Image (cartoon, helix red, strand yellow):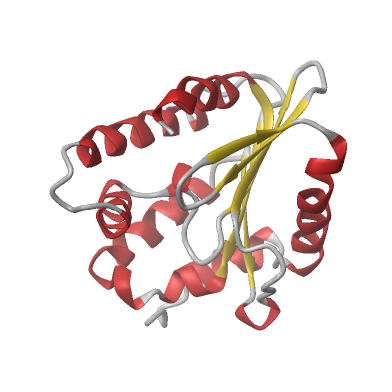
Amino acid sequence: MPDLLPTFDYLHASAKTMTFYEPRRIPSLLQSEQYADVMMRQNRNPKDPLVKEALQARLSRQEVLKGVKGDFGATFYIDETALHDPTMRSVLDEQLLQLMITSSVPHCHVHIIPSDSFDEDIQTAFGLFEDFDDNSVLVVHTATAMLVLEEANDVAPYLRKLNELRETALDERTSIEKINSPVHL
């Protein structure tokens, strides 16, 4: 995965639009430092020295949401279950506050997928990046690898999933209300 990080950084920096779906968790570009730290330590050896380096790289990538270019837009689909994750209880309040702040930024669009709409079809994290020349690249994250897809046949199932997410997702206002709801755990 480290070999692909420059590619991943480039995609973030050159995107006109980005659309993300990470099943059952908060998308990495929206994660608070504490949430990201807990997430990374759950997925790796907690004593691994690369956890700290990976955490800093993730937080640095979030700067793309602050340095906005003209028509830039970022859309995030978040499973409602991520708002209730008991394994993240210690950091969830701060994470939800960060989601509220980010969702108020005009170029960031946060949509909650209701838990009763959960679909087992594609349960792999992915992001669609479109640049200012209308080129599209899809990045798929597996447990052990990151795949960069450009071919229409490879990208098609993920585009179908994005269409399903758009149809089932709450609108932005209702999503913000759901994030701000006092009952999460």
